[in-house]
Structure formats: structure tokens, C-alpha cells
Image (cartoon, rainbow, N blue to C red):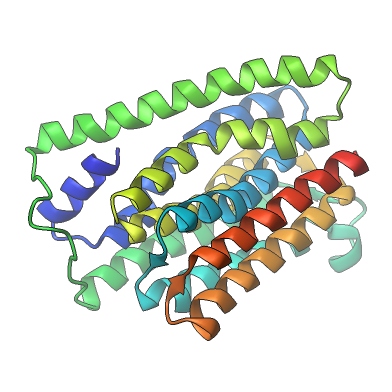
Length: 300
């Protein structure tokens, strides 16, 4: 899929960060969409929220940690200045929307139809911004000359083939992981935050790790940020409109972790070193992730 995305970017002179933030990010988030629609139809609201929050934490700490450990990630300034703060602000907005009783005076904490519409509008705004930015800021491609340019059909088949394989693989992992987790009497919340989140994040892990190895830092980090935004806007927006979801406030701690991680990423890439996630910073992300996973298993 990385090869297909790079070919698409070079063929149409579109920056890799735009491809990573949109096409690749949407494709690698497909497992979350499938799993969450099935979960919400079965009334497993804790699984839905746990999967989305857990997937974003996996993406931020584990996947960026692994990708950055493979090769330090240097990205375009627009990613640091706009996309990362947008993602961080989105988490805060969602935190307010689902904690209705505290912030909005509601009678229960949930994500309903109005919340879903708001999230979808934020998703559309983000997509328009990405392509407006590409069109009006004269992004230049930094792809090696040896990057192959395939025909339209070959490029499309490469991307679709990669997405299909990722979705099928992620679904198989989730199906088996849920059976194993339930045999150990784990809660739906914990299953969503860990087993299912890990399974549905495998496409992001594969894509960003391969992109980092091939020195495609913009795809690697754009995929993570784009997937996180896609998860919290499009996927949760669709879920909320199809069937309103009750929110378990015990997951507020996990929101805090996600917000803190977004702030830390911005600090690492802007204040400490110009537009770069270095290896030691990536290793710190991995250490935080291990500590977080250990804590939520103890917490249950």
C-alpha cells in the first residue's frame, strides 16, 4: 500500500503528507469502522469507545514509537503547526461532547445524533483543509527519482489490494482476540482498549513501519495523525448517527493520556528539535505505552 500511495503521490504531484493524512489514513482505519459498526449494533458501547480511544493511543505511542525507532521522523512544518494541534483539539472537543452531564448539563453521558453530525462536519472541514493546503501552498514532492510511476489501474489495484489485505488481517486478529479475552473474563472496556484496539491498529503499524523503513516520514506520521482524526470524526460520527452510544466515564483517564500524548508529540517535534521525532523520543513514547498498558490491566 505504501508503494501504491507513493506512486499516486508522484503521478498526480500530490504531497506525501496529503496522501498519508487522507487515503492511507482512511484505508488503515477501515478495521475500526467495521468492528465498531458491528459492536454498536450489538449494544457493546464500551467496545466502541474503547476501540477508538485505544486505537488512537496505540497509534500515537506504539506506532510512532516503533516508526521513530526505525528511523527518526522529519516532517513538513504544516503537520507540526496544524494537523497535530487539530488532532489534539479534536480529542478535547470529543471529551466535552461525551461528558454531557458535567460540561453540557445533560442527563446522561453519550454521543448522539447531534454529536455525530458535529464530528462529521469536523471531518469534512479537515479533508477540505488538507487539499486546500496542497493546492494553495505549492507543496513540492520529495520522492526519490527511483520511485516507480505505475498506470492508473496498477496504482489503484496496489492501494486496494493493500487495503483489502489489511482489513481482512485485522478482522481475523480481532475475532480471535475477543474469544481469548472473554475466556479470561475481561471487561468490554478493557477488551476495546487493548485487544481490539491492537488488532484494528495493525494496518497503521504495518503501513507506518514500512513507510519509516523506506524513508517516507510524511506517510508514516501522516498516516497516524490522519487515522486518529478519521477515527474520532468519521467513524464515531457514523456510529453516533446510526445508534447513539453511552459513554463510560471510567475512560476519561484514557482521554487524558491521549491529550497528554498529543501535547508531548508537539513539544518533541517543535520545541526540542525542529520538526523531528528522534529515536530517544520515540523510545520514550514506547516506555509510556508500556506503562499505560500495565496500568489499565491492573485497573481493569
